Amino acid sequence: MQLKLEVENNTLIVYINGELDHHSAEDVREDIDTAIDSKNIKNIVFELSNMKFMDSSGIGVVIGRYKKISKLGGRVGVVNTNAHVDRIFQMAGIYKIIDKYSTKEKALENM
Image 1 (cartoon, rainbow, N blue to C red):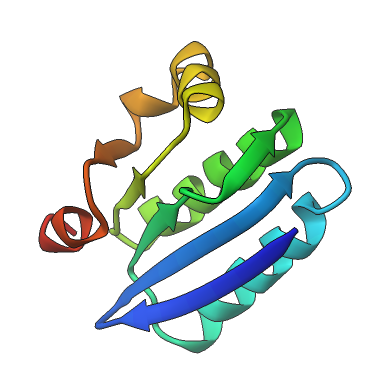
Image 2: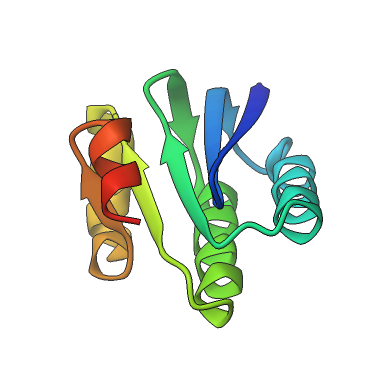
């Protein structure tokens, strides 16, 4: 699993390549939290076009970052989910709290 983080204005864009599962979730969580705390981040966009698999640990990472950002008055969005991840997000009710956007640019416009 590879993680790439970019900052645009006060929005952290999180690119996840590979699998977000119990083996990688803790490292991903730590890296995202470090960026939030050190770079004055208010919003997060998860760009998931290259994410192959997600389990419940990955859901925990997303929901945990949502809670952290919400406390800061920010928003979380997701773009480019594949069918597997989209189904998991729907079943877990994540789309009730996190917005899904068609492109990264649309997500950034709405943050």
